[in-house]
Image (cartoon, rainbow, N blue to C red):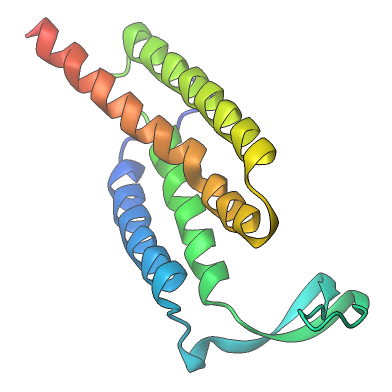
Length: 160
């Protein structure tokens, strides 16, 4: 089956490699504070605030250069790239049933993610909410990848 929106199956391998390495680095960075000094760069910022927790008034800047450790940006970018490659890589035997499983998995993950987001908005506050939103950036991809591959595996086992 030919589709406009899926990319070659060859990208799935690259997607897994990028996604798993970025996930490991992201977990290490998020929970372990991994920010190597060689990733301290002067980078462009479209919007920047030098807010702090001392109650001082924040100064906002539009289109400026800032000093930043880009470890989290690298991890997030690689997670998104790997996730996109995995989500949009065609299966070797892509047919109407696999497309149905793909669609249902995407709808299921969007529904679950939306419910999760609503619960978080209602019951999680302050900086913890920020951390949950960072986690939520990747949740839709992770849920889709897990559900799609589990349902696809079960479908293939049932048809053998």
